[in-house]
Length: 341
Image (cartoon, rainbow, N blue to C red; front, side, top):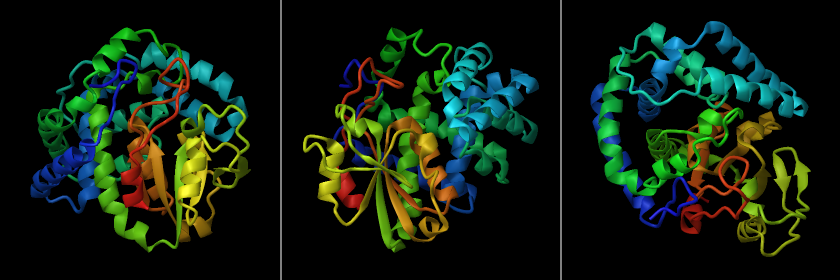
């Protein structure tokens, strides 16, 4: 049973269940003649986001979309202004984009896909998705067929890991209103399941290219050393590097356990790979440790830079930036990390 403070919680059975679900999804998707498994994932994402956010996307004012998109771009270009931009974006997102969930059964046309992309761009949470959807040329009807199948079948394999999500959100109804992560924080259960399936699909898609890379890096979120208030990690081009100051820290343990791998701490998904150079794009493969809702974004962020990813999901959320009253140590399945390395 998921703990009351967590919107999701994984266990040892999770990886077998998600593998079985992925097998069934890929078998179902291949009858629609997608060019590869990544295109089938793109199709499913489009369909799920249209189902979840289509009604809001259809009503989104073009000026509000452009304003929010420009602010998101400004925030990435000038991180020193993040507090001011986040405050402004939070107010606009809550007023214009944060609406009660309403099932969307409108037809998905090329024009409506553009409106959906505008919505996703305005949120600022899906920037590394957008090129995949703008370049999507397969039948949009198939996106909806995949989504209908996914909605009917995901609960059979994954509902037990998100069974507390509804209560979690009900108990935190007003949390993150007027904040820039309001859409992200109030994500629907289907979006959690989409990212869980996406993790398994991406691990399969990019495994061969990952194995060919001569450098391997483990990318850890800041919550892996959340209780180490006096962290002495040193800033490096691809993230902060452990200096082994605290043997109780999870980052310390992972860096010691995998001495042949580069290990970096990245405080936020938006800053990941910001310092990547051509040599990284040619040589590096990464294993990203992330919470569920960041998975697809992080995987495509890496692959868009020609850095093949693998991932291991955090067993639960761990940071007060989004989820909890206080930071706690992030936990991972170490057996799964061993398999990826």
